[in-house]
Amino acid sequence: MGLKTFTIDFQNISKEKTLRYDVDFANFQNDLLVEKYYSFNDLFEFQENKKVNIENLDDDFFYSEIGNVSKEGEVEPVKLNFTKRKEEEENYYKKIEKGDIIQVEENDILLSKVRPNLKKYILVDEEYAKYFYTSSFINLKPKKLNKILYYSLRTIFYDNLIAISRQGKGYPTLKKEDFLYLKFDKNIIDKFTKEKDQIVAQIELIEKKIKDLKSQITPPQEVINKVFAREFGFDLEKFEESKKEKFFEVDFSIIAKMGALKSNVSATLNSKINFQIPNVKYFKIKSIAKNIFAGGDMPKDFSEEKDEIYKYPIYSNGKENLGFIAYCKKARVKEKATTISARGTIGFAVPRNESYFPIVRLISIIPNEEFILNEYLASVINFQNIEKSGNTIAQLTTPMVENIKIPVPDKKSQQKIVDEIKVELDKQEEIKSKIGSERNKIDEIIEKILI
Image (cartoon, rainbow, N blue to C red; front, side, top):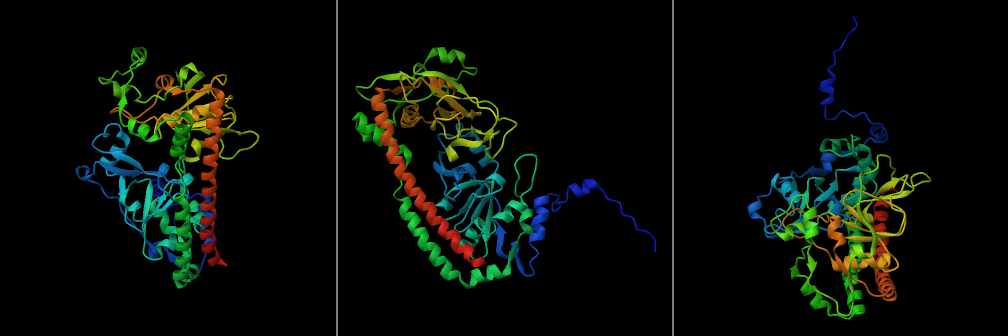
C-alpha cells in the first residue's frame, strides 16, 4: 500500500471559523465528554440585530451598552434626546445609523461578547425590552426554561463561556460560532425541566424580595442634594427647577486657548447652574487646587491582580467599579485627589485617598486642604451635577474644570456635610449588601441541581 500525502493550504485553514488552537478550549473539550447532552441549538437560537429607522425614533429613548450594565444584570441606560443631541451623542448615533444595535424582546438573554465582561448578562423583562442595545451583546432566545437557563449561564455554565472565548490581539471575545461547541448535560437540563415550576417559584419569591429592597435605594445624587439643601438651608425643589435654566459664562482667555473655536458659546464652554446658595462664598476650582491635569495613556505593563509589584490602581472615567481598570507598578498621583470623568459619565467625581494612575478621559484635582477637604470637593462637584452641553461630543477639559465655581464654607461645615453624606450612603450600601445575599440564594438554588 502506497504512502498517501496531503497538501494543506494554511490560508484556507486560517479562514476556518471552527478552527481552535487555544489551550483553555482544548481542556474545555476534554471536560465535556458527557454521553448524553443537549446542544446549544437544542436550547437556544440567536436573535439577529435589527436596523432601526432613525425617522421612527421617539424624541427621548434609552440606549445601553456593556458599560451601563452591572454584573448583577441591572441596566442603567443612557437617556438620549434624538432631536436635540444628535451631534452631541455622535458615537451613539453612528452606531444607530449603521444598524449596529439590537432591539430585544421580553425573556431574551443578552450577554457580553467580551471576556472581561462575561458576567454581564441581562434577562430582558418588560421594562428592558423598551431599550436599545449595542451589538457588543449577543442576544440569545431560549427555546424553553428561559429564566432557569439564564441563571444557569451565570453559575454552572459560566466557566464554559470563559473556555470558548477566543484569545485575540486584545481582550478575548465570544463569537456566535463558538456557542456551537457548548454541550449541556442532559441529566441536568432534564432535572431543571422536571422541577421547573418549583425552581421558578423559589426564584420569583427571591426576586420579589430583591425588588422590594431596590425600591428602598436612594440614588447617590439625591442623597448628596438633600444633605446640601439641609446644611445650606435652601429650597431643593427650587434648586432642581433652576437646573433647567442654564446660562453660559465666557472667559475669553479660555477661548483664546481653544484649538477649534465654535460659533456658539455653549458648544465650547461648560454650562453652569443659574443658582447661587446665599451666605456661602463661591470659588473657582483652580483657586482652591494645587494642581489640575488630565490622565495619560494606559501603562503597557499592568496586572489585573494586585501584588507587591503591581499595587497601584489604574483609574479611568466611569461609575462602574469607580473607574477601576487594573494595577500598575508606579503611581502618577501620590496625594489625595478628586477625579472627574471627562467623557461618558461626564462630571462624575470620586475622592481618591490612595496613590493611583489616572488614564485618558479622567481629570485629577489635587485640592489645597488648607481650604477644602478632598471628600467635600468630590461631593460638591457631584452636587453641581455638571451636565452635557452644546451640540458637540460632550467632553470636559481641564480649562473648563478650572473655572467651575463651587460653594466653599468653612472646613467644619465641610466635614459635617461629608459625614452626613457618608452616613446616608452607608445605609444604601447595607441595602445593596442584602440584595447581593438574596442573589446568592438564587445561585444556590441552581447549583443544588448538581448535587
